[in-house]
Amino acid sequence: MLPQQNKQSDLSRLRKDAMDIFQSGLLSADPAIAIQRHLKLCKNILTIWDSTFGDSTFDLDSFEEILVIGAGKAGAAMAKELENILGSRISRGSINVKYDHIASLKTIELVEAGHPIPDGNGRIGAKKLFEMAKNAHEKTLVFCLISGGGSALSPLPFDGISLAQKQETTKVLLDCGARIHEINTIRKHLSLIKGGGLAKAAYPASIISLILSDVVGDDLDIIASGLTVPDSGTFKDCKQIIASYDIASKLPQNVLDHINKGCNGQIPETPKPDDPYFKKVKNLIIGNNFNTLIAARAKAESLGYNTIILSSLIEGETRDIAKMHAAIAKETLKTGNPVPLPACIISGGETIVTMDHHGLGGRNQEFVLASAIEIAGENNVIVLSCGTDGTDGPTDAAGAMADGNTLKRARDLGISAKKFLREHDSYHFFKILDDLIITGPTHTNVMDLRIFLIK
Image (cartoon, rainbow, N blue to C red):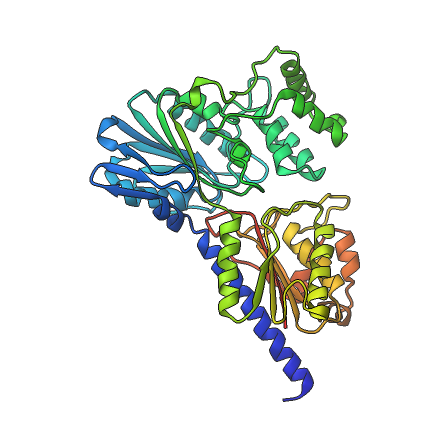
């Protein structure tokens, strides 16, 4: 075999291995598997396994009705598995999901809605969730199925704030590079059901919230803006976030007025931990990013790679994080540190892209493009980054893949990687090179998975 052919063969093997590792991580976040792991039904006794607080049991005969409500990209798959377990015991239910993220269900209704910008369908569905919760009583058991995207998918703003104003607020927050914790802090204070509002509406019913975390650190009050969780944030926090990004002039006046009224005590704060609404609420994380990284590591090791997990808590500007990862990959290639060859470097979390141009892409595609520039010319280095939900930014791609030869291929086609990066147009760059990763809806969401393979 000629040297060039051998090089291409090695890269093809690395690319296949990277996809296999990603798919193994993705499988570990399957909602059905996650629910099966935590829920067991024996006759009429439901046992919920919680590694942190121990098992809890519920006698289903003691309830007059069982409701299923919730919101998120994984909602349909979660609802389907819950129907498999509980069957005809479910009285009724409704879940807000992203368009096309559906499943065939018997009892639980799905409302398809917009993400990441909320839309009218989301509001209709959120109102339905709110009304179902308000009609619950002491003999009602409510299952709340929550996953990433649940915040945007369940817009129910306070009176005086229109859906259009909520949409504009979300867009401004996304474009300015605000972290998800900051975005959801503001969302909660504009909503009737977020920040514990749904639990407040359902009180005194019993609530079991099954949660797939798409938030760095698994903060319960941030995931889907904490529908059934006490809110740790305040109106004053909202005002500080707006000031820190200098976006007051870009936000609707009604939104600013609402936040100012809250700061002045004219509007009640969101429910807090000492409120009674949470006494009969159990919030359980059934899947998260770290579990996905563990599964990816196991697959990488089975393929013969020495593997290191950097962190599941990585945040920051995408380009900066890409440079750091690429530097670690090059150090590994040069010195065998922090992991000897053949090596697999894995990380998770969720980065941000601050938009100063309006190309098309997402944080994962931009991560791969920025990394490709840093590893240009390095033989036998592959980088893959994908969102576990199958959607990276406003595109149909989950992410992308690149190697040390990517920039040469681009130059041969007359395109500049640095220009596409500068314009945040990673989608079109990788589309030209046929290096987009398109999975379609995965029906889960536990943030991102990034993989470097080095041989």
